[in-house]
Image 1 (cartoon, rainbow, N blue to C red):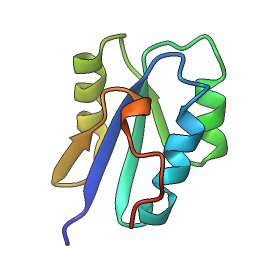
Image 2: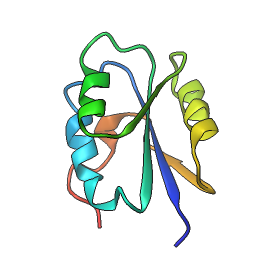
Image 3: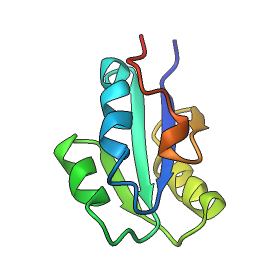
Length: 93
């Protein structure tokens, strides 16, 4: 399987980003997870850093943020969740 990136744009997602990253923990070695923050003023970035995920900042807006994530992705294929609550809340295998 070729490496894949999952790009997740965020804005003030402190309440849900931790559980989203927990649900991706089992695939973290096979999937590059990139959080693209649009300027959160809550604890989103701190929570992402505590989960040792990649976090970058981009201008606010899902399209701009997904593009920013794609620019730093180091893989051939990218997927995205436009809001963290749309990503699975149960572990992926």
